Length: 144
Image 1 (cartoon, rainbow, N blue to C red):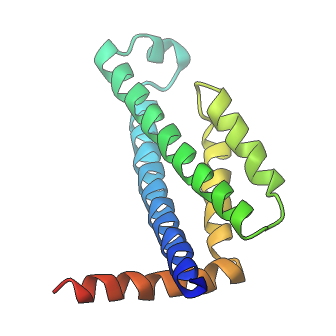
Image 2 (image 1 turned 180 degrees about the horizontal axis):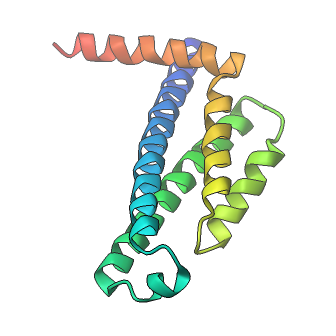
């Protein structure tokens, strides 16, 4: 039973790893979109003149970024509680800022993404991530 529980926990951490990778991809795409938008509309007055369709695209990306932040944060909090890790106050602070403000500041988002990657480097997480990858490999190799 304990071995099964360890396998499930490890596979959950592997899923968390994949979600952090997805967050990173969305973050990079979002920054590229903002850079393009900021170059096209270099001042606040110019941005006010942007067409509604372009503003809608930015809004959709903000929602996607926030969704990825919510998913990874919730997953991490479950892992944090299960492994009895110390509370990550810095991550909590950036998550609160991202989730409570419509405009996501690039610096706050960058820090949140960096902290998620730092979490993946924790020794306990690394060990379970390795076991989770092995467990998932076994599942897919047995499906054939």
